[in-house]
Amino acid sequence: MIPNPIAIMFGDLHLTLQRPACRADKDWMKTQANYLNQIKQFADRLPILCTGDIFDRWNAPPELINFALQHLPDDMLCVPGQHDLPNHRLDLMHRSGYGVLKEVGKIVDISGGEPFKTDNFVAIGFGWDEEITPLRKRLNDSPHIAVIHKYVFLDKSSAFKGASEELSYSKLERILRTYDSACIGDNHIHWMI
Image (cartoon, rainbow, N blue to C red):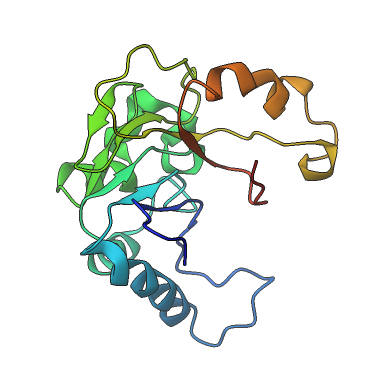
């Protein structure tokens, strides 16, 4: 465990009713619940940040939305990923499972690039297809964290074949370095600098 953590960060849950072909779990719903319960264990002590793609598809069935309502931590600070949005469009969020979670107050959508203050940090969220902008102004002495859903690769070994150089960390480094920390979803491959 990291000494004195200020938040738990994760992304790309891709919750689904159907077990992915690459998994051998006998009870996929139980497997997903177990992972989410591990996160919930920290929710009473630490804020939870989610970098998007809560659902595998924007039009999650009611059974899966109910599952999310039961098993996700309350008041997670989230940004939507492309899988959370109809036609990958932020303006259609209200038609999605993510939009339902937001509307009922299960999650707090922090997309839009505006600062969201907590007791321990300031989060600035950039959902799918939102321009990542530099930190304009520090609100206080707390860490300022960018919460992002955008495919960003560290180097060619962590990129998909044919990935544009525009998606490289080196292209975003100047912007990201204006923050104390950044949590980036959509990669499905972890890397740290």
